[in-house]
Amino acid sequence: QKSISLSDESAGAWNNLACTLMELDRYDEAIVAHERSLSIDENNAEHKLNFAITLRKAKQFERALEHLNLLELDSVGDALATVKWEKALVLLHLGRYTEAWPYYEVRYEANGIKRLNIDIPYWQGEDLAGKHILILEEQGFGDTIFASRFIPLISSNARKVSFICRKPLHRLFSQLPVAELIDPAFEVRINDKVDYICNIMSLMSFTGIDGSNFPKPINLFSPN
Image: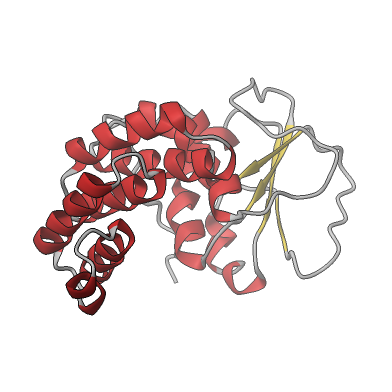
């Protein structure tokens, strides 16, 4: 605010104020500040992206999507990955799952999600009959537990499902329809040939999940 009082025509100052107000959950004020920033520098892609993020957090999803669609046309490289990730989040909020999944896969580039450095193809919905697939945990415990509900969607078709997840989850996941649980803290030694790898959050993308068939959480606890 002090910077703006010294120079009302500073797009950067207005953008920084908008982002600060957004972090304070003062979305209406943040939107006004974003609009002022863009009225000064309408072609600033970073400011446009910040505006779209604020609109998403303010639950103005359709308006955020309009801005992201325009940004997607003009962005390249890391900036494009960030725009696509934001678009994935907005589409998921709108319940447009089928449209969201291809954008959701950009999380590797946008958020630094690691892939296993191994010469095995990543599964993208291919027929798993007679195949061995290796599922990888990702992100935090909550994401992995949430996405465990999708494993039964592939276990009935695959010859074998192996699951790499941290040791504290093994007891909880003992009820899952998987052949083996592997602790990533140790060197991965798999005696059986693996045909495909898939990060667990990608199961949503490649099992045909939409708003009508989202599976309920599975019971991970034994009767005892």
